Image 1 (cartoon, rainbow, N blue to C red):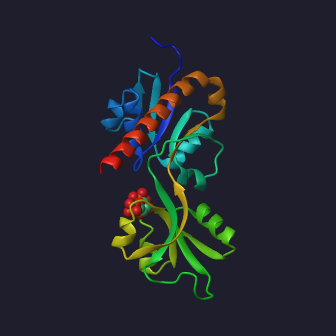
Image 2 (cartoon, rainbow, N blue to C red):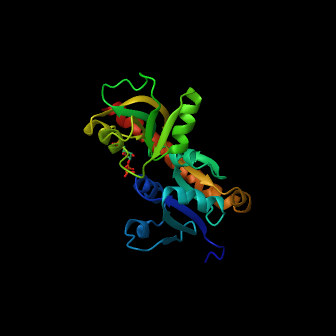
Image 3 (cartoon, rainbow, N blue to C red):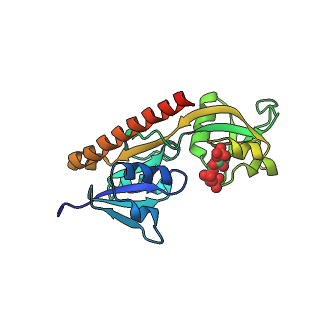
Length: 225
Ligand code: PRP
């Protein structure tokens, strides 16, 4: 029996949860609890002696920053919005999407002299983007379904993540400008990286192998189709 304290890994609930569980399953971790979770909050795996926790994206950063969790699986979007002290160890290459400036189809966002209003769940990202452009804007923070804001006339445009583009399309909106690409990252607490180097490296190496395998299989599928 492993007498060491389990390594703690925080996974982000929602959009990237399925892919995160899949990759840990692929490296042989016991993910049965994560797949049938009910109201449980911590799921143990014996293979790597890991405790998985499922939390909201910003909380992944908070737990890792404070060192009560060693590893976090979180989107680059959340990392850009909440500038926390966590070390990014690898790009897991799933949950790919982009940050974009979007708004009502056919409108020229840049015309006119009025100060534009931007609705977003990501005020920090939006502010930095327009600051770089030297553009003065007003930010309106929205918690979800941000596409509604320009439709209802609350804002001129939105800064949000776009994955398939379906939400924009189905609501009469379009991308004005791409801001940057996003994918899921593996982050670590810097002290954990020193203290639990071997355990962390073991998992990270296996995840790396899995990503390479998946990329090769995706490439051969592309060739066939
Ligand atoms: C995200 C994002 C868009 C949508 C984009 O919202 O804020 O609304 O997904 O995806 P698509 O390009 O594939 O249509 P999410 O589903 O995370 O929900 P929320 O708006 O309630 O936060």
